Length: 266
Length: 104
Image (tube, rainbow over all chains, first blue to last red; front, side):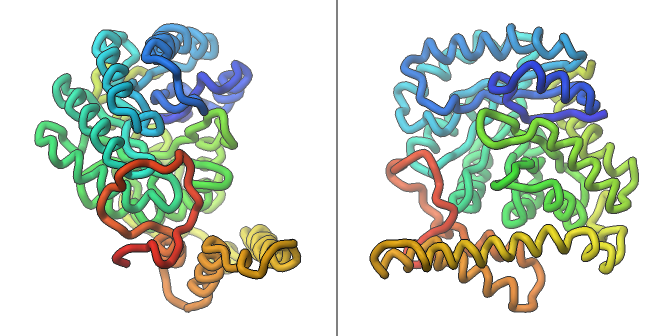
């Protein structure tokens, strides 16, 4: 049994839901993200938010998987602050939807001033509504700098408790920074970038399993919606206990996400 | 394992389990560098900052010190601290030119 706390199912086929259910997936959370192209209007996001809050939960339910979501305009489309703020204005009307857990995945992409301005606007919205926050950290060479800038930005919002913020896509050079500042940390399991299942288990061995989770972040790019159960297998094959495997793939996401008051397993 | 813990398997078992996978990856790196050498183009193109970064990473692997993965990632990271004025693109290159590393 497992939870995949970060997977972009709008980009995946229904066959993937079936395969995930067969592998033991009981619940997922789906952050709003970049579609691979920039939307031409805020209305495009309105329709996307309807897909995340209405259509996708029904598709998941066919396979006994409980679907939850996070809303935002992602940092890749935050370089136009006027446009991005129009999208942010759409979010409050969706916060009453039962499967909305919070704001995400917000953060930075290239660590620009405009991206920081929109990150700050999202954080203010989360603080105003007392919502959980799911944070995307930048890719590759931009990750270390971006992770530090993001944590500083969050600290500027005194009402945001770090124990209610998960900073995702950590790797060996950022995980300690995130945990030492009281945040939760997520490891994304990708074939070429971010973490492999082997490296994720290495990080558990080096940093423990407190406030850490794993996710597939399966999307429209090279990714694997079965990455979480493959990491469970990696842990078991090294001789880690079933309790440890369950902690990182079920108990930890359950603990963090339950703070929303809305997270349910099937 | 709430706190740090070594792998429950022996060093020998780790090597048995992972050696062939990483043997293949080392050969991939060697073949990539050979491919760059063989490819057509001006000599200066071989000085691509990404290739230089990869060579610097290889030196980290052999320095005998711990935390190689963390140190390789840091070597490939932007260490400047101020946000940039405007995003020049959406993607990332995976390495940073030595003269653009900032305070390291």
